[in-house]
Image (cartoon, rainbow, N blue to C red; front, side, top):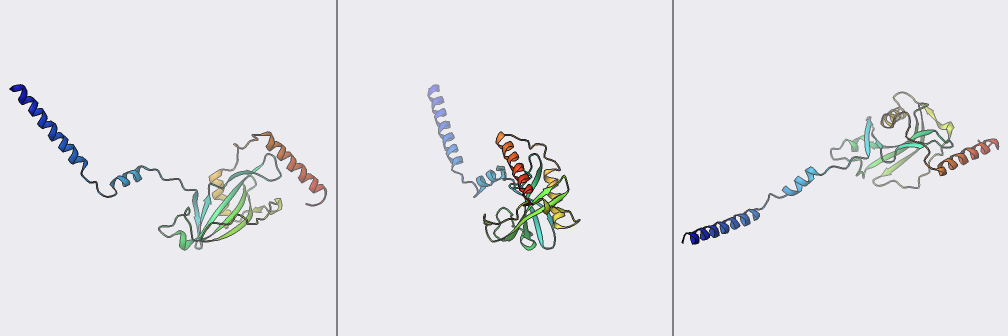
Length: 202
């Protein structure tokens, strides 16, 4: 008799526990509670743009993705910094919801070469973009060693120069020849340049 009572008691307790589990599972969570927790833990993708200056007309961003050290044309072991600068009209860039990654407003892209060793800058082109992506068929000014310009204090070029150098440094010790193809290409470029100079084309 005692055994039957104990078995009956365990049976009742098991039924009550099962009801409690079902009831707990059936409780509805507040809308968006699970989404918010996942959003909080998810890491935001790093921005490709660095905001480095502004004036009464524009806010200036450096494009980290397409900027960096490149080999100086017609040389084997000299490097300069290529820089793409996004110039956004002040009234757009200061808007609370503005993001340089998702930009459908009017802006300008300027392309520069920066020479930290000689403290000079060379302008290559300016692209005006109207509410979309820039075209890839823009004609740029060709590189010319005569186009290097000294810095004028507080000019746009001076501001760009210092922002780029602050980001990438004054020297590029990591760039070394990695393949024989690069060496051959560099030697060929220098040889062609010398032949052109002999012919009086430069």
